[in-house]
Each structure stands twice: as structure tokens, then as C-alpha cells.
Amino acid sequence: MKYSLCADIMFVAVGEKGPIWPDTDGIVNAMQFAKDNGLTGIEMFGLEGRDLDLLAAKSKELGVEIRACVSKGAVLLGDPAKTEELVKAFAESVPMAKQANCNKLILNAECYDKNAAREAVLAAMEEQLKRIAEIAEKEEVMVLVEPLTGGFFRSSEEAFGLIRAVGSNHVKLLYDIFHFQNIEGKILDTLKNNLDLIGDIHGAGAPMRAELTVGELNYEFILNSLVEMGYEGNFCLEFFTFQNREEKVAASCGILPQ
Image (cartoon, rainbow, N blue to C red; front, side, top):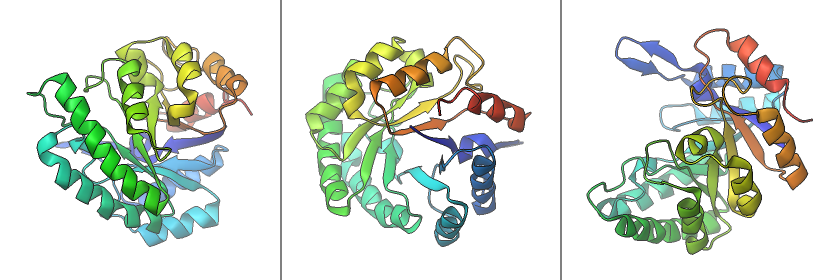
């Protein structure tokens, strides 16, 4: 298994008007922080407004990969009226991601059409993802669909059913353990039964989105079980560290199977 951390979540600050996300220098600091803690990758949110050439150079220099980023238009998945906008935004994001040496782009359906029937939203997602898959296959990148707490998906069965319906090896699910613990629980059975459809895994203590050693989930057991299942993909630390970042990340890294 490979390990990374989410640079934006890990290095976000709180300002008077809301979150202050890290700039290019902040992402570079996150790369160094990951390396200092024995991690070999980072993930990040948006690509716009960041010096992608510098990030690519620092990634190579430090030996810390940029394993995933959020596509432009990510929130539009599931809105039939926004299909053309979403496909265009994804197509524009691919060369930007490649510029940063990143080959996985995340979509999250945060702004799906809440006035439509669930079947209509799923049908729209399938159509959108099939079109996006054509781009991903041609450009040799992967699309990661991430269900979120309070978002469209009410079960892993629904989410994995969508991935199966799209039917492309370039479209996988980003299985966020924190979010799915909130959505339905039954983490290990779900992982075991759908491992071939998972392109990335995120983790945080639940229900408070804290370090892996805090909360109701036994991450040491979960991660060792993933090793036994033969999972060789990426596991990303994605929890908030407004205080005592070094101690929280060190504690979490201390339970990662080697």
C-alpha cells in the first residue's frame, strides 16, 4: 500500500470569512511534511491558481507524488443541465493535472440536481461519466468519484452500481472511510466486496474527522485487513489538524502497515 496526505485539508487555516486554503508554497510545505513523516505522496484540491510547474519540480525533487487532485467542475456531477459544462471542465483539467504530474482527477457530485428523482440523477451521472471516461481513456488518466457525507449517495451499493454501469477501468470510486462510516458503516465488508472498483481510499477518525487514532473506527485493524485483501493502491490521510499537526500525523503514521 502507498500512503499520502491531503495537503489542503491538512494545511487549511481558518480566517474571518471562512477557510483559507494553502497556496503553492503551502502545497510544497505539505510535500516536505509528508516526506518527513515517511509518506510518499500528497493529494490536493483545485489546480487553478497554483504554480503547477513548480509543484511538478518539487514533487520530483522530494520524491513525493501528487496522486490525486480535484477536477474543475467536480461538483456538477449529477446535474443533467450542467453536463456540457462538466465535460468541458474535466477536459480542461486533464492537461493541468498532467502538468503537475498527476493522473487522477476527483469528481464529487456536491451540486447534483436536488429537484430530480434519484433515478434521473443516477442516469445523468452515468451519461456524464461515460463521456468523461472517453476523455480519460484517451488521455490515460483516472476519474475518481467521491461520495460525501450528506451528499447524493445513500449507500455504497448505489455508488458502486454506478461505477459498474459506466464500465470503464478509467472510472473508479474514491472510497472515503470517514464519509462511508457516516453514510452506512460496514466498512470492511464493503471494501472486500468491491476492491476492484476502488481507485483510492481516504481515512479520518469518525465521527469528528480527526486523526486515525481517535474515534470509533479501528484503523489499525482496517488497514491491516486491506493488506491481507491485497490492496496495493493509495491510502490518504484526510483529517483536520488545526492544532498539534506534527503529533496527530505522527500518531496516525505510527499505525500504518509497512
